[in-house]
Length: 47
Image 1: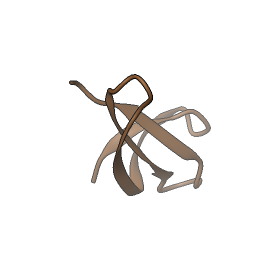
Image 2: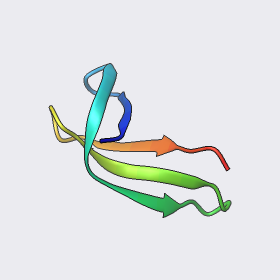
Image 3: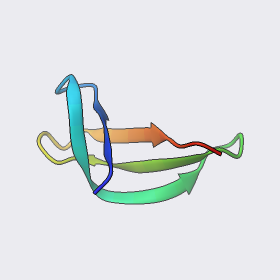
Image 4: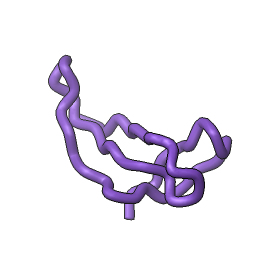
């Protein structure tokens, strides 16, 4: 499982349904939902 910061929970949480996406500027990112509250999460990865 991938971890990212949840803005709603104000803590690092695990992501559900995490999928790797590419942003408009070409950088890779992980997109998913917070395991606790269900808020959308986004984590920018290294190139």
